[in-house]
Image: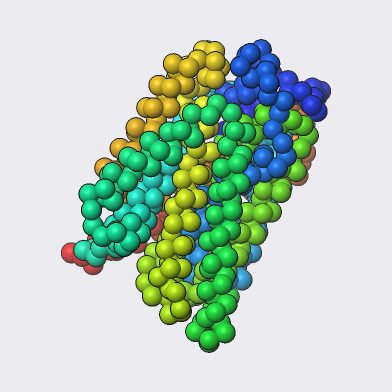
Length: 449
């Protein structure tokens, strides 16, 4: 998240990006459009389409696979309503960031730390999923074959570690070397297209099973039978929040836009497109698998779907999703590197102007993520507590807190009421979710004993 704030009386140019004093933003700037650095003189600004694809890719990551499971908890009616509601809250929180984006020194450091926790965690999860999809995984004594193992059999070269090394050196490292986020616009467009491929396949399978009467009518509302099932409803909130987290990239994209006035339209277009994908994925995923929907719907495509060419469709879904995550990786990595540099070297020259610092931070972060994906293969429970907490801070608590602080006295009464509502909802729902997850974990351990 690169926060570039302007006071109420300052105006931003439409065609030529004017970068403000680097000490004023909440987080460090990318300096992608600053003409004072000669190697960027030829860059005239990012296009609207490229900005939409980059922001949409930031939004649609691994969270899309957990959304059908939220329908199992909430039911289709309430679940879809919550997806729309979270999109509205996200749009307002991003608007707050764009309007009120200055904070004190300690607030800036705390926010940078949250970006690091969130993004490192997300990227480790991406790499783990890619390893699971391509090389397979074992859980509770059951081995789930990966795509490469299914195609070619069990060999040393399609083992998890080797596949991740090849993916890291052949895909992640080259894409992470771009110094402007706009340079990733084509891979972002391809990433969005791959997410649509996954959606089209899921819709096609659902339609075929509907025609053959192989799909039951899904629930529209949550199934609440006792107090435990009531508290469980709140466990979906961190999933929905994480699905929309893109705040750490909004100002990076804004800084590089040819016309800064388009950022609001970029945000709304991206949210509308991603919300549509989320709603369709949630609807057809839950329609297809019903109460058998797993926490990661991708795992449901590891069995016979009961239709012709089931194995081919399963592989197509898994490969397209793995490729999608590979292309999302550099877009999430970009603000991670920028904020780590701002945290470690707050008074140094812009990162893009120092090749040595750029290369060392890039290599160090990629190595850390690679080690995390290999030596911490089961991290889902941990990220329910840490990742979701960092995500809700980035998405709602910090934007609302900045608005309530209102250094320039420009926030309206409606803004402040909405800011208070965001903080209350975020804190309450996440405390309940953490309590519910911890309670379920303790109960599981008691049953084992």
